[in-house]
Structures are given as structure tokens and as C-alpha cells.
Length: 149
Image 1 (cartoon, rainbow, N blue to C red):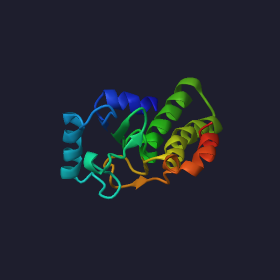
Image 2 (image 1 turned 120 degrees about the vertical axis):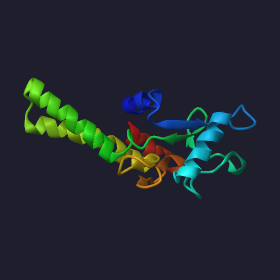
Image 3 (image 1 turned 90 degrees about the vertical axis):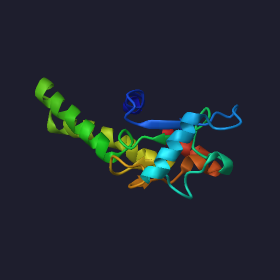
């Protein structure tokens, strides 16, 4: 998630928020949603607008995240591979250690697929989205809690 935060701050990835204390979505959220609709990144039937309930990622306030690099298996595979190669060249780590770094990097988006949107390929959020949506199934909370621990 550090990679996600970094890419959000660098404006490589995006977020549209609708805090519960506002009566209408902020103009930036509407602009982001409009851009996603025009570029084919809006997922009809999955993403909902404010009039439909704005059911984004349930955090402190609902948000839609466009995080197809930091939460994609491909994006994290590239980062994991780069870190493993640098560690091999700099510190002389073995193959097993390098594989552990690589697998740890890709395990985050793979596990995220059980809880919320994550992606197989990097890029367009509508192309390779995968989710089981455990975080939206209330009776799954005990299982989700154990998996997150």
C-alpha cells in the first residue's frame, strides 16, 4: 500500500471521494467519474454514481480508487523483480531469497482480489479487474478479519 500512496501523491493513480458529510459529491469526484466514463474505465453495474448510492471502497468515507498499477499482479511483479535483482546484485542474495521477495510483492494484489478490486494487468481499471468482495459480505467479517491478520 506504500506504493499505492506514493502513486496517488504522484497523480499516476487516482481517487474520487464522496465524504458522508457532503450532500453532493465534490466537483473533482464528478470530474474523475466523467473522465472514467469517457475513457471506458467506468464499470456499469459495479460503479455507482451519487444518485445510485456511490458505493465505492468503504473507508473513512466512500471512495473510488483508480489504482491499476499498485494493485495489479503485473505491476507488483515488475517491482518485485526489480527489488530482487537489485538485492542480488548489491547484497548477493540467493535464488530462494529473491523468489521470496518476488512472491511477497505479488501476494498483496492477489490477496486483495478477495477483499476489493485488484487487477491482473496494469493499466485500465476496467480490463482485468478481479474481486470476490469479502469486505462487502457482512457474514464474512470474521473470515476477512483472520485473513487480514
